[in-house]
Length: 98
Image 1 (cartoon, rainbow, N blue to C red):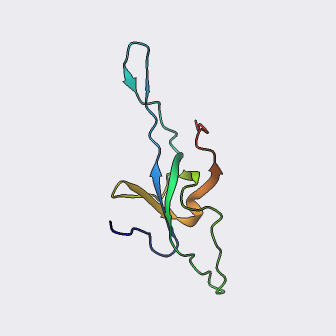
Image 2 (spheres, rainbow, N blue to C red):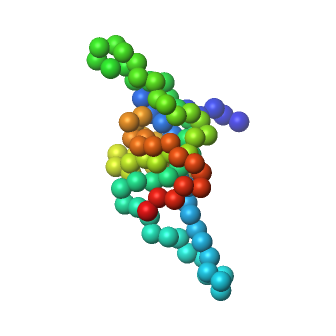
């Protein structure tokens, strides 16, 4: 198996796709939030240095569930890849966003 990790200053997240079914067995997907998405961190790239040389280390790790901004997200290989500052919050897996 090949190793996957994003470049410096980026984070890769696997988006959580919620689907539910009715009592009749009809499967539907609830309407997504247009500004934010929920997902699990797959890999975190190295910190990007600030102009003054200081490194800001992200406060989330591989496996954490997060809420992130949809704006500026690149979709590739089944992952959402974004800048470190795109992560808005660390949450529990069963947390719903609306």
